[in-house]
Length: 200
Ligand SMILES: C[S@@+](CC[C@H](N)C(=O)[O-])C[C@H]1O[C@@H](n2cnc3c(N)ncnc32)[C@H](O)[C@@H]1O
Image (tube, rainbow, N blue to C red; front, side, top):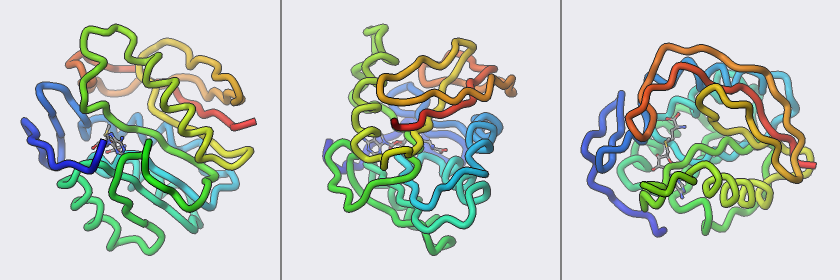
């Protein structure tokens, strides 16, 4: 996907909705903060974040992981990229990258990838295999872009255990009950898994 400017149903500081699907809501903040908190005491100098959205995880990463040399954020959508450029003015280590994570030519590998994108092709609609498809594309790309021993972290909603992923070691920190928020498909989420994967 080339960088694009999309027509959102709604886009403000609290919500982004595309063709009826929730791309991001600020109500996710307690879960995102809890997901990022365990990364605090790890050796992390260079981070790639995939998808700026409302900047909630970007802010959480800045607060939690310090000192942080490089915080690259790749964003495909133009108006969200503009928000990212404004955000980057507050932090010396934030580099806004405009493009698609799957085709962007990164010039380094990373200690941490926080992967939180959204499939605008809506190819998950009626497929019922959304997680599986996302996982295989995502994890392949994460593996390419991580250093050995690097960490792959992404939101995992609901009460199901996080799955093992070949080539990674899963570190689980349990689950957390959060104030309910709407997922991409309009269903309610009140529970999230906390954990991450270490590239072997
Ligand atoms: C769920 S939101 C990210 C939410 C963000 N973590 C936050 O805390 O606000 C998904 C973001 O990924 C972006 N995105 C979707 N596909 C992408 C891709 N292939 N490459 C880069 N960014 C992408 C979307 O435009 C959107 O900003």
